[in-house]
Image 1 (cartoon, helix red, strand yellow):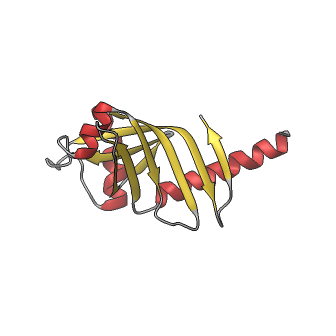
Image 2 (cartoon, one colour):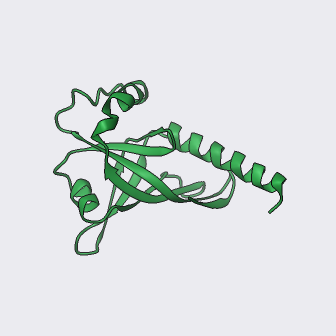
Length: 140
């Protein structure tokens, strides 16, 4: 790949991540202990190269991540696809940094929400996209 192609792919990836960050919701897929998938929509923010969600500590999603950290996040548009595969981990230390992001995006104060009490950080391992906004695969 030429230097120009690398720059083009990096710019496309940044554009896709910006679109993901701005999206209202994403689908969050995790793996149950018996191997069955669990898929549900959730609010998210992007901060310093990671995706973040808040979920109840006793939720199916939280139990699944505790068993197997591998997850996928996807935007709901089947024609302009964005899929992020990665590893999720609890990130309680991020509450102060993320609180203004969730507040600005959703008018939701995660620091005072007693139900959604677990912050999960998702480290991207692979991003795939195709459709009107571009096509590519990136491995991290």
